[in-house]
Image (cartoon, rainbow, N blue to C red; front, top):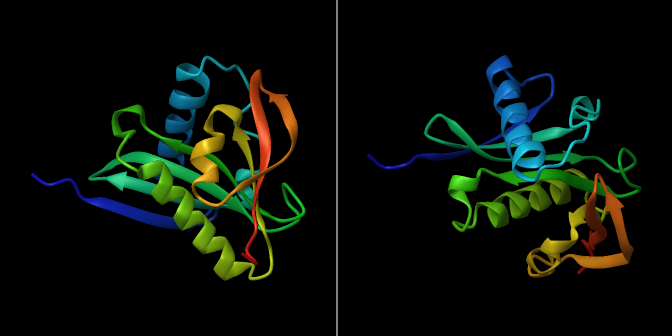
Length: 153
């Protein structure tokens, strides 16, 4: 049987209960349990985001949420980029990030894209066109750095 990969964009209002449960499960599995990071994932920003879900057959294997300018940062932004551990090393993180950039560039033509990147992933994001801005800071016990993707480039 071949694996069928499907990318789905949803507003918060259009998420099904199963999709929302899949999202929260994947984020909890990776960000809280795997990374051993006790933090408040359910932050009431999901309602303001568009959600990119990546399914392999019927399993959610990747995800990101994106925001218009003025919600998380002055520019548009991407957050909660995550790939299930079983699917890492297959370029899904790259695909998710690129799809999110395309979505934001189409919706918010003149807005740069901002992320709060885990510092250990700086090279990954630099290879996708992001540039670091400012100093490393601690967020939920993990080193992060602000990164910007300039749409004018």
